[in-house]
Image (cartoon, rainbow, N blue to C red; front, side, top):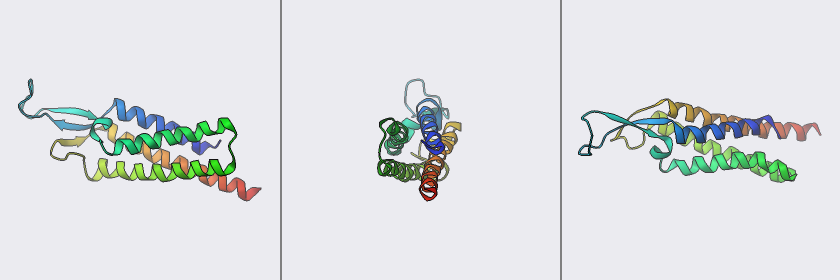
Length: 147
């Protein structure tokens, strides 16, 4: 197991917790609802706000955890390499999608008024998964070159 895999798994767990527990977006209340005040905002978690991307993020988290769990069965080098490359591809796609949704194009732009701290931390955690996956691939290549 490499430090990169441990970093990816740690950041994956952190990303999942951030998506479920912290506010990612400030959302205007829907007019006409009971108790709605004019101009007030509510908070929306990443899970609720990112309806399409949340499945990509969840799959990325599962693959990051599977990359660590795979070492318990003594897999072949090819299996580990495939899992690491899959994690690198998935985490890169998830990070790009989160960067777009956090910094460039907010989801539901007619309702979402701003991004909260959870969105920025979630985006950074997704970049941590990418960095860890890339480090794991580099470490494996260095080990193969040394032997």
